[in-house]
Every structure is written in C-alpha cells, then in structure tokens.
Length: 624
Image 1 (cartoon, rainbow, N blue to C red):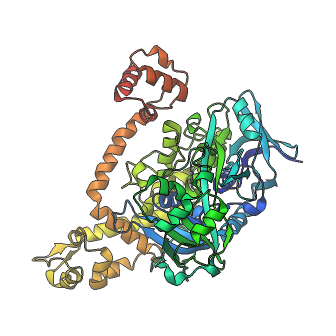
Image 2: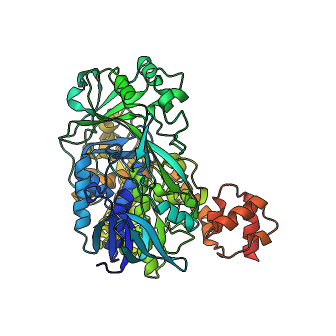
Image 3: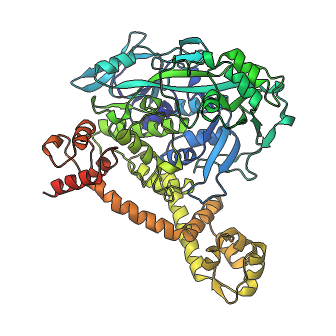
C-alpha cells in the first residue's frame, strides 16, 4: 500500500508544512501524515503572522524558498510595520490573516507539490534499527518505511486541556491528543517534560460595541512578507484596543481557587512573555488595567480573538469578566479560553541540523522542542526539511550561523542553551541584529538556499538585480553633488539646516531627517536615475541603500565582530573526544561537553556554564 519514502513528516502544523514542502521541493519523495487534513496549518491561537523578531523570521523563511510569507500575503487582512520609530534593525512586519483562508491556501500549495503525498492518521511509534530511523507505526496499524522522519507534533503529545476544574485530553479544543509516541521516545532514551500554553476566549463580533473601543488601523501603505510577486493588500480590516479594569480583575480573582494554574493541576512550564490574564493580575498587582487587542479572525467572519485575555479560569468567570469590559457589555462567546499541557523534548538532544543525537535521521521541529509561536515552528520546519533531504543524499548539512539569520539564533539557542520555558524569539536574542534586518533577508539567504537546490534561479536573479541597483545608486549618490539652491526646498521641508556650499548627495542622506525619496521628489537628476531601475524593486533598493549609508559604520563594526567570533566555529571538535581526560577543564564543562557533544569550539562557547577559560583550554588542546 505504501512505498518507502525519503522523508516522512509527522504533523500538519506550521513546522510540518514547511518541512514537507522543503523536502519535497528538493526532490525527496515525502509523505505528510496528519490527524486531520482539514486542519493543515491551523492558526490555533491568534490569527496573525510576524511581529517583533518573528516578522524577520517569516521573511527569512521566504528568502530560503519557504511558503509562510507567501501564504500570509495572500490571506492577510491587515499589515503593520512595528517599531518604525526605532532604527531599521528593530523594524518588524506583522499581519492579521484570515484564519480559514490561511489554512486553505497552505493546503492548496502543498497539494500542488508533485513529490508530496498525504495520509490522514496518527503516528503512535517509530521504527528504529541499529539506532537509525527506518519508519513509523500508525494508529491504523500501518508500518510505513522511510529513510528519515521529522516529528512536528505541536501540542498534541499527551495533551490535556484545562478550563477551571474541567480537564480532558486534547491537542486543541475538539481534537484528540496523541498517546504512545512520547512513551516510545522515552524508551529510546529521550528526555521529555511538560509545557503549558493557552488561548483566549473567542467572541461574536455582532455583540461588541466597537464605538467604545480604540481603533487600530493598518499602515497607510501596507507592505508584505514575500520577496516574490505576491498581491498587494487593499481594503484592510481594523483591529481594536480595549482595557480591563479593577472590577474585571476582581471578578477574575473569584475564580483563582478553581484555576488549574494556581491550584497545582497544571505542572507544565508556561510562557513568561505571553502570560494568561490571571497570571498578569497575580504578577502585576500594582496595575489596575491591562491592554487587550481585539482582532478579527477573517475578512468575512464575525469571530474575534481577544489578544491578551488568555485564560484557563472557569468559563462562567471568563464570561462574567468579559461582559464588564467596556464595549463587551452584551458580548456573546463562541468558546472560552483554555490552557493546554503537552509533552516536549529537551532540544539539547539535537544537533544544529535538528537531527536527534540518539537516533540517526530522526528530526524534531516546532513545539516538540519547547518553542512557542507559528514563526518559530515554521523556521525549524524548513531547516529540518532541508537537512533531512541533504542527509539521505550524503550532502553537507545546512546550518545558519547567528550572524546570518534569526533562524540561526533560534536553532543555536535551542541546541546549545536548551529551554526552561516556552522559547519565543526577540530581537534582543540576536547579537548581530543590525545585520539581520527584515528588509535584507533575501540578500542574506537566497543564494545559500539556491546553492542547495531549494530557492529557484528566478529568486536569485531578482536578488542579483536588486544588489546591482543598490550599488549603482550608492555610487551615484557618492558622485553627484547638489547646490545650496537645489537643496533649499528639500532641507526646508525636512526641517534641517540649509547648505552653505555645494555637497555630495550622500552627505544629505547622512542627516537623520533626510531620505533618498525626499531628495528625489525635488531633485530631478536623482529622480531620473532611480527611474532606470526595475519598478518592482525601486522601494526595496531605496530602503537598503539608505540604511547602508546612514548605518554604514555600525554595520561594518558588527560584521567585523561576527567574522572574529565566527572563526571559533571553524575549529571542529571530534564527536568521540574524551573531555574528562582534559583535566584543565572545569568539572561542569567536562560534564556538559560530554553530554551535549558540540560540533565546534564556537558552539561549545555558547553552552550555558562553559567559561572563557574552558574555551581557552579547548583551543590550546586543538592547537596541540
């Protein structure tokens, strides 16, 4: 009934979709096994993609040849570029998506990939021979053989849903948990633990008084995620802001005795940066209100997601508290918020390809690794899919460094530092964030992806054209001079001091208030030069050229540091090195290095508890 596959992907969430698409597009015969074909790429929590640091990852996935950005562009109903008041390293795109269309679009794309097959079933065990994966066992009794397997089980492994004192098994509301697979993995020697996440109440938009809420519109000129020719957004939907009050908090406190979080029924570790409303009230006792974001679930849907009101309190308490929020006095709900506990596996058990150390050709991606968020999951999925294909074809693995991508930071953090709470990406986690801007992801990554056969030549041709145009524009700006007379209107409009003598255009752009676009509007020679570029890339060319000019010194310094520290990753460590024989290493270093087996000295330097003196010992040892 089944052939032997190159890659089997278990789970049809964001990680599974990117993993199966990447492997299949690289020519691997791939099978995606999911519990419910109708829920592929389900937006289980908020109907949005991107955000601070997350938006950068979506653009990186797109630059690598993934689909999260394309699907988002095709289904978005609002777009906002966050942090525009800060420097370009902090700009982060975020979009509200139509939740149902998002899932449908992903399925449509996957069904169009020739090398990808589908099977609706539940994987309950793995087939392993001589510490190498050879296939999976399913609930229907099938044993399906494969050269590699990627597990992307999300929150389904022994999932338990909590609503007040009610609890029942499930990976999502109305969907069954997966049992048996965790136990199978434990028998193979993997270490697991429990984590917790949650989701808010969903509200009938017909019963919300939006006149009492603050409007949060999208950008006037909305951007997009994909570097491909996806459609521009028109007819945006508004989001709204609401606020809790002390009265709302007092109502919620009535349910604390029944809260599974406070009475000990939830043992899993919850997310620090996305706490439930009861957790916020308990932790921030000095605040008598909290902000809520009221987000539409779709363009034509009446369902609204109340971002910031995640809860596992009894449903009647949630309902009473909700109706005491201004604008929600007559609100009706579709379903209450709930918490969910599930199994995850410590990611320090993985290599930086996301292949497990214990079982060859077995990969983990997504929430099974202790992460949270669609974007984090999708990023791991594409890396696992790429590396599964490369491994079975005896090709060099694909690893992104911390200075190349936020995805590199994500994977490096997981495999070297591990997790003690659900991992979420932030710009603060990336030490080279001025290099890792959302606008230059294609410049950073598309050629690398093309070299391994994922991103097509058409994508790389666009990047080459963009780079050539940027260099031509910067050269023009360095060569062309402008007179005080021609610059007068430009500088007056931007409220900056006039020129006293002729100067190069690049010197005007170095002024924080002045942009290339400001000059081109008034100065015809620049306008005519810009019009020689391909119109589809003009906006990107202007933005990148301006960033390189204004922040050139910072970018250069960061690149120098990245190169210097990156040299540590060139020093390979033998997989069978006896660290306990190196007596100059601290005992903690010997223990951790023996357990985690880093591939390079650079990787070893990023393991928690490894000191600079330990790194010096290793460097001296390799020198010998």
